[in-house]
Image 1 (cartoon, rainbow, N blue to C red):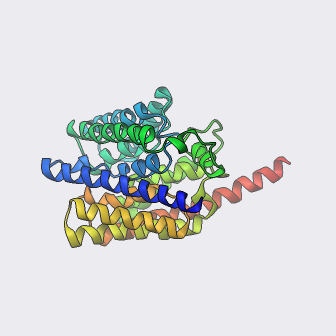
Image 2 (image 1 turned 90 degrees about the vertical axis):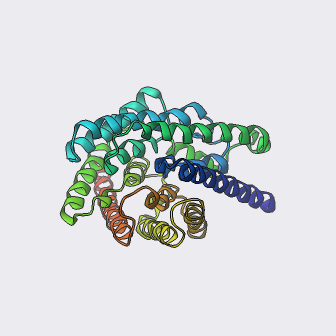
Image 3 (image 1 turned 180 degrees about the vertical axis):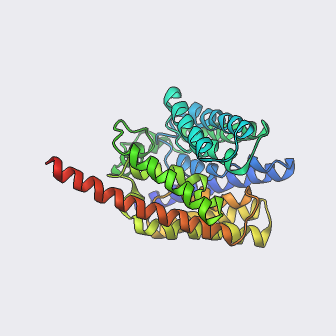
Length: 319
């Protein structure tokens, strides 16, 4: 049984790596860098690893949600400067879009914020994202139908049920003030340090999962390990890019390092895979990037521990 499970995991990893290699090759051939939307790494890893999971069972939302939020990101970038207000519009607007679409694809928030972070004003940006997520939706549906029939009909495991909960929008909103305070403080920290990537787009997704699903989120259970995982993913992405240049080789190696790191640490923090691919699309991909990611993720851990302490004290008072 363990051998069968190991083979399933290996196959899923290989398919996701091949998919990302194809996207990177297409981006290089077309000269359109943003075809390589970094969150595709996290999305592809999850839908092939969990073909019966929440994201894999919503192929239309998988294809459309990031592109729709990317349109909002381009609109905000065209008409507003990078500021606390424009960031808030992107993040709140992306949440509203997901709610209206009834979409579980939370990484779509990153698609919106990434446009603002990069100063991307071209309508080619949401179109590029749509091409990538659309291809992933088609491939994941085919994979689920023809290559993983047994898993698709098997009863979900406890880990799958946790992942499904994490990949859904929460019903309770008690965490929202803490989440908003963290985002505001992170923006101020990024401005104070002069490093915009302290507030790197996947950080919003990582923080959302931690605050909104604190009881079950894997990296919320081991928050001290999170900065190391995020920083190493960023460093691997920069190292791969510096060694091999942009394209298939650096994309595959950065993502493979991220996957191996998550398996070795047993920390199912798949947004870290998006961090590993961010150097492919940002302007300045040098040692400043992992430093910024380390600062941002460490600040998140400190903020979350404070949130845990505050919410725990609140529960004790209520009792």
